[in-house]
Image 1 (tube, rainbow, N blue to C red):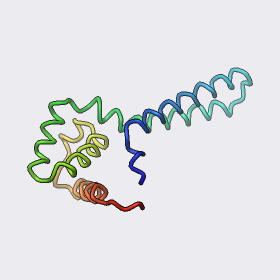
Image 2: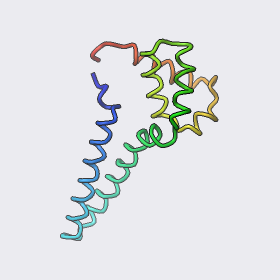
Image 3: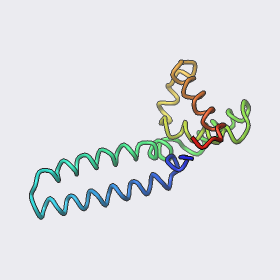
Image 4: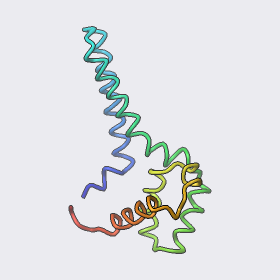
Length: 126
């Protein structure tokens, strides 16, 4: 039901909203010189960065060759639907350097993979 939250278009739309809010707060700050607008600017900028991290990890740290290599490994173990969902989540969660240095046998990573697979296979509304 909430699959749109992790879609790229949602993230891009969210980033545009944050930029508009930052611009509005900057304009209001210069008009009124109230310190509340500085707090709004800082908080909105922090949320802007927070929303941009998965987008950055997915598109700028993973090269096309490394993505294809990882997808090929996944296809040996799983079907295409699970691999696509799992890969997208891994690309957004980890940068390529972090993923390369990650212990694939750690309990945290295995738990992440299991939860992601469970979410990918879940067809319920809630």
